[in-house]
Image (cartoon, rainbow, N blue to C red; front, side, top):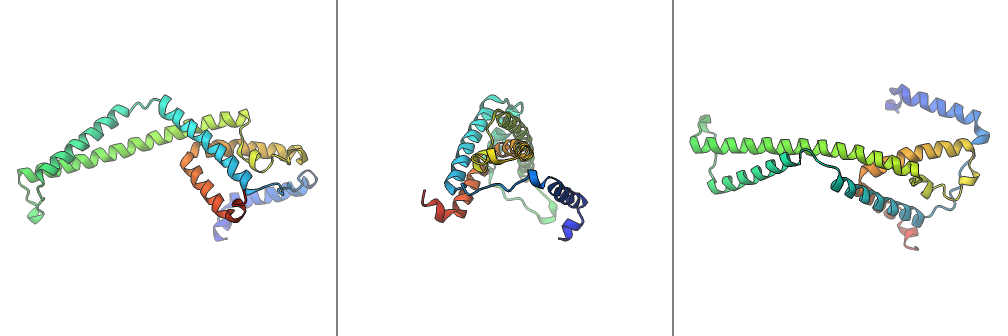
Length: 207
């Protein structure tokens, strides 16, 4: 609660939501979710995970990585250093900070390996950020085309009972949410499906 008090934006949004509901109460009826079943949820999440996997494969195959050559050279050099260090097997002496020529060579190779690993990590993060942006754009396109997560899970059978305002709000949020989930990757979706199954384990066994 203390964190909420320190966040004026959250308080403003809560007040705005309350006032909006009071003014539009007649146009914001409660949504009937009696049709919602674990099987329906898991099925829609499963379809979504397939779409996400296709998007990931598309990005992996067709989206060029301009730093691929650099990363390959770093990996090859790391393998060479590992092979040389394994052959040399020279322990580095820490006494008085004095190193002989071979020990200095080992230290230099270990530092070079560390620098190469840092380069690979940075390049991997840059690649991940680029692919997330591309996946989000593809997700937006799919959402605008009609593939929407919330509509399939919650509102498939209740859309006709929604007011125009509710339908607009839900579909707007649904477009953004679906695109974000697609950009998140199939691994996270698989974990989500697993948690849904665990949460509805008793009911899900009936399907």
